[in-house]
Length: 510
Ligand code: HEM
Image (cartoon, rainbow, N blue to C red; front, side, top):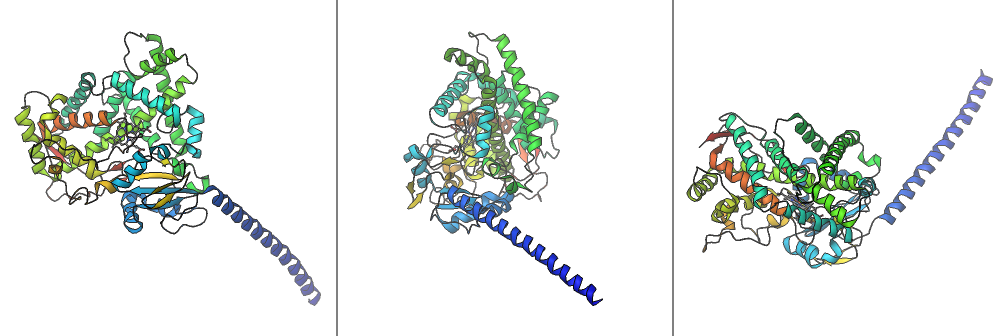
């Protein structure tokens, strides 16, 4: 037995020394990995003394950022209050600097445009997309960006944005929406946002592909679904982090790839069709204008992918933003029936009720215009800009913003600053009306489309869509609460844009 015990003891010593060895090895390997990754992190990450919340090694403030969830736009506002006009977060290894307040955003994006106009196209996710489909517009830099942006602006103008031809397309959408609302009179309606984004996608579909769909068309519905899936991604900064950082975030990569394939096939078939029927004397849409520009440049390589990328960007940037703005507009109308009534009275007096409201009526409808400006101010659909990057060290508001940091203009800090807009949480269109002339007075501090060279190129289209859809619907319906006890959350939720918490309304035909 003793011998047996001796054997056991010897075996135990041997075994435990083996496991102690592997434990030491494992510990060494782990320490090595942590040190290696930390060095990589330090090497990768621009250092800074910009104030911000405590950051862990490697992951930085990623966990805090993810935990902000759907209330990220509110939580970031608290960080602004705590740390001041320039604050930072580390998202994994990336230093993300938030610039707050109108003067500082203007200082960075306008006065220091040379240093802040670029996008961080070196993000892994962006590099992957560029490899797949070319540079596009939103993430392009330098001469290529200038060329594509100029092309997009010129072609949108030539295709009728800001002119009568686009007006007819939007008017048709407003009529479709009128019919849908009329068919639901006095019933609870819970999908205003979906109705708006469907209409707005249809307008962009017309600009790009030359025709619109019926809202109930199955093909159109499947395209809208696919667009929805593609746009629901986690955003390029998070998508650039190593896979382990994205665990549990439900990024749905494979679903998005499938949806992207559906859209690519659709775009390819449309381009092929356009090439067959192309007539340089009759440019019908964005694809025709692109084909013509390529013929003039003598370029044709990568056309389908490049075009696909730009088209996706126009849908991505133009649909959700404008649709969400309109959704917010109707929410504010049911909460502020007097303001809604004032808009209606103005329309009734200037336009009457026997014809549709036209874009040319806009200068005579200052209260309607001011109401929509107030929606853009208070709802903060794009609470911050798309990421910019600093191409060299720059001082803003007494802080050195290091080269290669990711820079976001925190636009809502300008809109909710009492210095710029007194009682900023109150919905008051009058703040945009000049007391003396009674006309709309534009305020520099209103920057929902950002500012500087990267300012949204879709501003004119978005404002035209908002004006025509909103005024034509308010002319025909009274939008109201379903029940007087209904409560509304005006904080909104962070998604692709800051969107309104789901709500219900009903319409009464006027
Ligand atoms: C209410 C509606 C809209 C809002 C609030 C909005 C807001 C913005 C903002 C804040 C930016 C980022 C600018 C920056 O990074 O500094 C942006 C960029 C952009 N927007 Fe819009 N947008 C709207 C509608 C549209 C529409 C209708 C289109 C086109 C069809 C569009 C196309 C774009 C594009 C292509 C960019 C990237 C520009 C570039 O990088 O040069 N947007 N938008």
